[in-house]
Length: 257
Image (cartoon, rainbow, N blue to C red; front, side, top):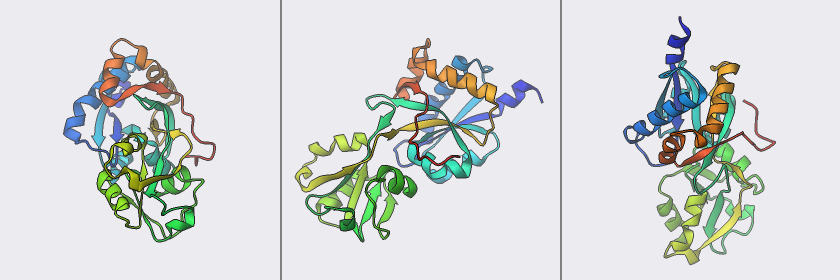
């Protein structure tokens, strides 16, 4: 098989569990990104296809496919699946209006949660709830949740916050965009920020199961790092809310893939 034919089988999977967006709507954007990344990296034109999946299960299934060599994943997904899927960080996303790192915010009813033990029997809802290892050991590393706390995924954050305000035994873990909207809520006075995570990566592009040679990975990494300054690069980044990429800077205790 020729090098070009082998390259044509390469796929980059965008996986964004919990966030709104349909695959059909996202496809033109990820196609544009893949073309720009290939051009910036010196890979053969047309050698990288891109697909989008808004679900955890769908993303995991796609990453197991032999032609998937790269993935663009939120950090919670990486924490949850890096070891199982052998994900090796290549670059870290620099997100418009956020940056390459972010803090997650735990919110509960005002005055109800004063210590981790106060959350015994609670349900914790979050867009990152599909990744309980991330929630417990990364976002809330310094806030030891009781073992009986149920961690559940939700994309309906406003509804979850209403449940908190109503006094249900519920807390919500918010990303920065969601947390920034709290003061605008009519019931904001009934909510309280309990704790915040340390600064954590927002998202990563990773090599899947060593399916990219070191040489190709290096050229892609260099291309992605320069992409924000390359002609046309910014145009392909902006629709995905990307400013550019930086070298990965993961917490010291991140489990190896």
